[in-house]
Amino acid sequence: MPNINLLPWREELNEVKKQEFFILLGVAALIAAVILLFAHMYESHRISVESENNAYLEKQVKKLDDNLTEIASLKDEKAKLISRIKIIQELQVSRPRIVQILESFVKAVPDGLYFTLVKRTGNDILIEGKAESSTRVSTLMRNLDATSLFEPPDLKSIQTDQDVHSTWKNFSMTLHQKNDL
Image (cartoon, rainbow, N blue to C red; front, side, top):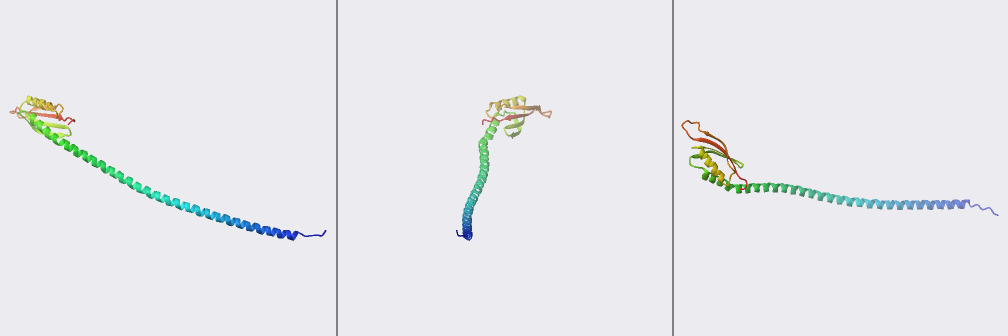
């Protein structure tokens, strides 16, 4: 049997297989690099699209915040205007009330009595005056009580005048207006 040396042939075959392996390894690495590049580009594109969406949403949120601020300021202005309107309406309603009060005083004051001070604070009216007698003050109180404008009057004081020759009485009373007017 002849002696055949297959070693060089095997070495060549191993070298060819080694070269094929490295070529396939290079091609696989190249394909993997291309796949990674495309994946990176795709993700970068998605990130930029999401960044644009976020920027758009932030812009819209800022617009809405500005609108909310404007709405809040308009609500404040509306509340102020409503309060002014209410005050004006109250003044319009109360305008004839003072005329009614003065007219009731004219009708209620008996002869021999006059006012020296009439002071209104809210719904309370302080009246000070002079009367020829206590019965005149009583008549005034009855007349004021008979009107529908006031609650019963509250007499604070009645005193004889300091002048010895005078018979006049100094009086002080408080009236409270009824709220239903």
